[in-house]
Amino acid sequence: MVDALYTLFGGEGQFLYLIAIVAAVLAIALPLLIAVAFAVYFDRKIWAAVQMRRGPNVVGPFGLLQSFADGLKLFLKETIIPAGANKVIFLLAPMLTFTLALISWAVIPFDEGMAISDLNVGIMYILAISSLGVYGIIMSGWASNSRYAFLGALRSAAQMVSYEVSIGFVLICVLVFAGSLNLSDIVDAQAGGAHKWYMWPLAPIYVIFFISALAETNRPPFDLPEAEAELVAGYQVEYSSMAFALFFLGEYANILLMSAVMAILFLGGWHSPIPGDDIIPGFIWMLLKIGFGFFMFAMVKAFVPRYRYDQLMRLGWKVFLPLSLAFVVFYSGIAVYGGFLPSGS
Amino acid sequence: MMEIALTDMVFYLFAAVTVASGVLVISARNPVHSVLWLILAFFSAAGLFVLMGAEFLAMLLVVVYVGAVAVLFLFVVMMLDINFTELRQGMLQHLPLGGLIGLVLLGELVALASAWYFGEDVAKNAASPTPAIESASNTEALGQLLYTDYIFIFQTAGLILLVAMIGAIVLTLRDRPGVRRQSIAAQVNRRPEEAFDLVDVETGKGVSLPGKKG
Picture 1 (cartoon, chains in turn brown, green):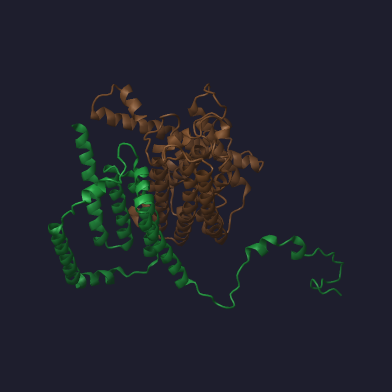
Picture 2 (picture 1 turned 135 degrees about the vertical axis):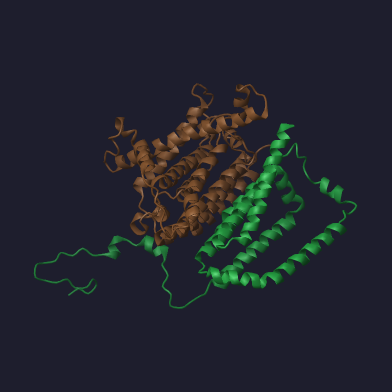
C-alpha cells in the first residue's frame, strides 16, 4: 500500500517515501477512528434491541451522531489527576493503550496488497502488540493510587496473560494449515469460496478463539476488570475527560481488531464466499466480515451474565489450555498424515 | 545513499534508547519505574533485532519477555511494600563490592575477547545447515534449524522448563486436610428437584424442615 502511494506521488526520493508512509497510516487510522465511533453506536443499539429498548436516538438521524456528541462532551471536560497519583504514568497509560490499539492495524490486509506493512511475521506482530496491551491497564491501575483501580488492574493482567496462551495455540493450528505467518498468505490459503474457509475444518478452534478474544478485550462476560458492581469501573475509575476517552476508543479499536483477525484467520479475509465472484470488491467483503465479528461481540454482551473470577481462571487454565493443546496435536496429526501440509515445506 | 542514512539513524535511536533505559533501570528510585524502563529496554532491543532482519526473534522477544516475563516482574514489584529511603541507603554501602564485581567481569570479558579465535571448521559448520536467506523466510530458516540439527538441544530446553514448572507447583502445592473444595461437576449437575421443594403453606401453620415430614 505504501509502495502504491509512493508511485502515485511520483516515486522519487526518500522524503516522498516518508510522506507515502504517513499517507498510508492516515488512510487506515482515520477511517478506523470513525468506524470506532459508529461501532460504539451499533454496540449500544444492538444491546438496546435485545432488551427491547430504543437505544441512542436523539443526536442526529437515528441517533447516529451520539458517539460524536459523547466524544465532544468528554473533550470539553476537565482532566482530573488524583493528588496521590503518579502523574507521568497516570497520563502515559491511556496514551499507551490507545497507541497500541491503533498500531496493530498496520499489518491487517483489507484487500490484496492493501495493508500498511505486509510483514512476514504478521500474526506474531499482532500477538506481540496484544500482549503489550496489558501494560496500559496495569500502569493505569497502579498510578491511580486507588484500591478499586489496582484490583481491576491485577484482575485484568492475570486474565489477559491467561487467555493469551490459548490464543497462541489456536494460532498454531491455523498456521499448520496455512503454512505461513504472513496474514495475506493465510487469507490466500482460504481462497475459492466459503467452503474453503478455515471456519469449517477448524470450527472448535474458532469457538475457542472467539471466547478467548472476549476475555482478551475485557468484554462481557469477562469484563471483570471493570465490573461496575464490585469495582466501580476498575482501572478506569480515576480517569475523566480525554484520558477516559482514549481508554474507551482503545477498547473498541481492539474489539474491531479481534473481529478483523477472526475474519482473516477463519472467514477467508477479503475473499468472496461465492467461488469465482469478483463483482463485489474484496475490500467490501472484509468490512462485512469485520462487521459480522463485531455483531457477535455485541450480542454476547447482551446475552451472557458476567463470570465469577474463579470460573474465569478455571475456564482459561483448566479447560481452554488443555483443549487447545490437544487440538494442536490433533490438527498437526491430520495435517501430517492426511496430506494437508501446505506445499513448500 | 539516503536510505542507508535513514536505517543508520533508526539504529542509533534504538541503541541510544536501549542503553539509556538500561542505565535508568538501575538508577530509578522507584522500583516500578525500574521495571517500566526495563520493558522499554526490551522493546528497543526488539527494534534492533528488526533492523538486523531477524523479525521473528524480535516478535518472540516482545511476546515472551515484554508480554509475559516483565508483566510478572511488574506484578510482583507493585505488590511489594518497599521503604524507598531505606533502599537507597543500602546503595552506597554496597557500591564498592558491586563495582569490584563489575570490574572483574569487565576484565574477564576483555581477556576473553582478546583470546577469542575461531576453530578451523567453524565457518564451514555455520554455513552448511543454514537455508539460504534469499530462499527461506526468517521463521522457516529458524524452524528448519531447530527441528533438525538442534532437535535434542531444543527438546532438552523444553524439558528443563517443564521440570521447573512442575517443581514450582510441587513446592507450593500443599495437601491440607479438612479443606472444602468446590466440585464443578456436582454444581453443574445439580437439578432443581434436589435443590428445593415447593410447599403450600396453610394459614396459621408453620413449615417443617425438608425431609422431616410430620
